[in-house]
Length: 102
Image (tube, rainbow, N blue to C red; front, side, top):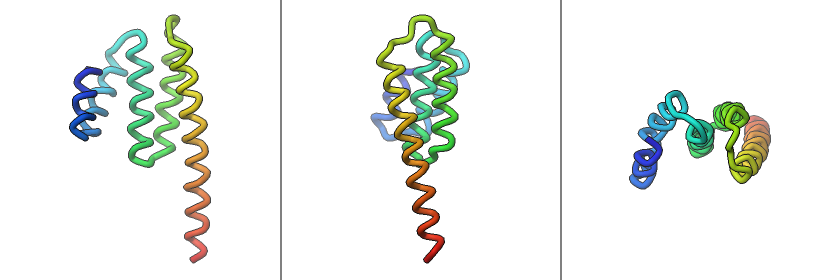
C-alpha cells in the first residue's frame, strides 16, 4: 500500500494516496503504521488543515510509542512537523483576525 501511495503522489493524486495511507494505518504493522499516520499528517498540511494534521501527528506519536523499533530520525521529523503545524495554526489564526478587521 505504501508503494502504491508513492505512485499516487507522483501522479498528484493525494486523495488516492490518503485512502491507501488510512488503510495502512488501520491494517498495517510495525513502522508502516506510524509512517502512514505521518503521511496523513503531511496530507492535511498539504490541504492547509492544521487541526487535522495535528490529530494525525498525535496518532503517529501513539503508534510510534507502541513500536519498539522506531527510528529516532522519524521521531525527530515528527517533532519538527508538529512544531511547524502549530506555528502555521498561529499564523492562520492571526490572518483570520487581521482579515476580520477589514
